[in-house]
Length: 203
Image (tube, rainbow, N blue to C red; front, top):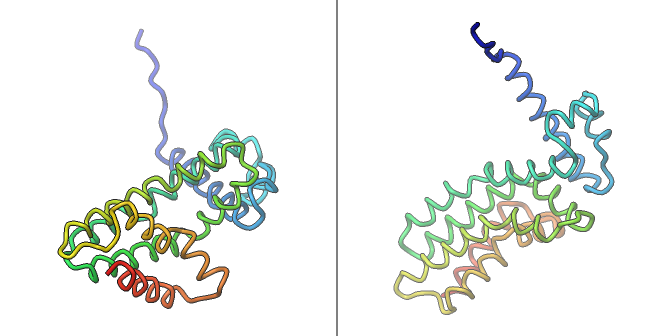
């Protein structure tokens, strides 16, 4: 007797993927607005218009949801394409201009995700590890940019590590958030000033 084959419906799979995406979107917005510790799975389910058991079946626990938000946020940040632009340029000004633009677009486009993660840190049981996971590729990209700047003549006036630290200070998520959210700058103005500050300080 032939064994039964698992039935797979493309429509069902598409519907399940759309449900997962909706749950993650609503969870991200709730975490960013209220903070991770003040949001329940029931809150997420209500916002997505599904039952709580659907949230658990589709994505998992609240912690699983945050983990998925982090992973998808990193994938959607566009840092790899931005770094292609940075590493393809051969003057300090051009490199730092591309770095300012790329990190601005990433932070602007992923702002809600960044807020969701930032507000989760105080109440998450593994907040430090969560932040490191969320920013590891970002920091790695800025280290690569620092090494690239040091291949030029003249190199920056600081060591490679110090240059990478300064790039993180200016172009990391905290730098962008301070100027745009806390101080009310426009993204355009923040990009221009951070770029000019980096050029003036490093050279």
